[in-house]
Length: 434
Image 1: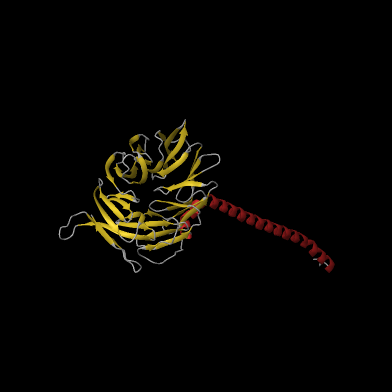
Image 2 (image 1 turned 135 degrees about the vertical axis):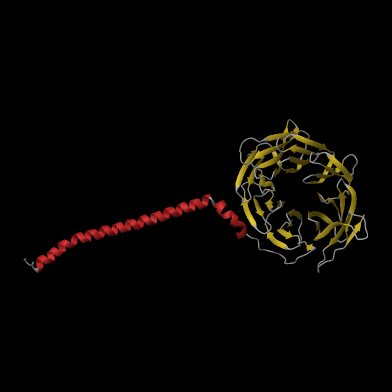
């Protein structure tokens, strides 16, 4: 075999190495393309993931929002009664479940029944208003743009609208109804669910929305409005489904010049308390169950599950009248109360009327009146939770426990007794009179 010389061998090696260089370049280019393709794929997957999270943000984050937004701020660690008021131009006390809220011009406070403060929220609203149900507090800035929903310990959600809020309410199903005023419409109604998701919008061109309530099923709402037609004041009641943008399920019109002041609904009945009548409608059909008309100035009212209580100043007798009505707006009983009566509440245990520094208690049928007299303060309002009255005074919130008992010596059954919790801060004295 001929052995090639060095020059030939070197030339052959150089010639043979050229294809290897070409293959390596192709490999590097292919590898770069693979890396680029992988990066592009990862980027596209990330974009898709972001889009999916954005589209389902409410479902993913709302269950955690209350935990993340827990209101930790407190102004006191004290427990018990009386609770010293912080100082405000105006107070509003409301019950929500086994708790109560206190709204001032600066703070929203939440308390449990022991007097312990759950939180104290500095809201920053110019004209704060609150509405409650068994679980939630709806706080809004009237004639401004902001509103928020709270539980007993947490912020659920908060929103800002483009138009000014004139009215808001929250139903037992936690549907929040927000009514705004608009340049193009008299009012616009927005409905949000418990997570702050928008559900429904209804625009009213020439009707002013007065009251909104839900039936508690998460779908149906009742709306009362006032409008004018040929010099007459028309009071309209509508039933809408928040799952449909179509016409109302029914409409009922009063031509009595009535101004709706209170509205309540369940699956059976709709109760409306107006400034000159009480109306009962069928929830399903909108047909009238009954109507009770009165002449006078409406002072206060309470709509319960099985009764309606209305306190008004009668124009003909100039007496302060308390009337009890059933679910069909038929009068059941009548009594006279003090002209300065303010708070009003009724349940199976009795009917409670706040008259300054005392609470008058009636049995069912407005009979057998008794008094609980508190000597330390003059009260403006109260809420009842279980067997306790939480009394809003001008300087404190007091707690009165009301119970009925028959003593060992066979004293009269059904006597109302009261006591007030004592703390190291103040001792509250109660006198029972009959």
